[in-house]
Image (tube, rainbow, N blue to C red):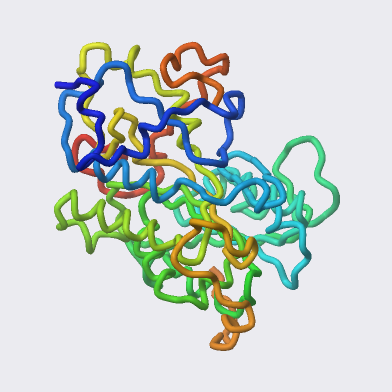
Length: 380
């Protein structure tokens, strides 16, 4: 079922995941910059090996392999699921704002923006029970002074809204949804940091973003957790597509971001370092994931970070089109108020000295989406 000869690539072209590599930051359990090192499994771990799942998995890897370097960015800021380009935070700019979609009990993203860069934030989540979330209930300290001790706290003002992110402003099963375009109305060029972690509801949101150069130019940094093959209620219009076509659509959307943004990092390498197929799938008994690399690792869900190209400037191999000047992007803005809401050898990864980082967590049960077809992870 599996042999090294199967790792030869497609049509004589080597798969991206087969490059020889080492973990450059084996101790870091955060998102990491650079092309992810994803060593192949020593034995094929799954019952099946479907060609299109491999091709799409490798295409995902290529789409999120950064070309921007530490030198281009004047350094990195690595924090949790984010690989931030320092240039995005060094220069002062008017009216900064962070939009964070998908909060759960605590949102370290918005706290970090507030307490380290003095950026006001808006938080959005229609599933999280406010009684279990100090920021969603408004009980977290809100611009009352310095934050000490590691508890929920914001040094700059924050607002929270029981609203989810979706492709339309609507109500679904009694929950309110609003669009990214509505939340970006009135924002200036390169003024807004955006985080999206909405359990599969991101795809049409991103597709609509790609259709607006103006809205793309408002976003300074974009951080997301992306989910291939998930079925979210707000994406129900695409449920009848064949699985391959549905995932291909999602990949094309991610590829489209490269026109205006540079990818700065992902959690793929971190997740690979915590994947142990030799222990978990010793007899090829594991179900094949919806997408995987030629070596077996699945990039079905991971965090990815972007910076607007206008921040960094031209980078060789950085995409098809340079970003327009901010003034040009601002020209068509309509006046409207904002709506509220490694080093482990690839040949012997078991010798990595790092404690294995946790693998991608399953979707939290609070998210109401229909499960993806087997073998995709399911959530209530």
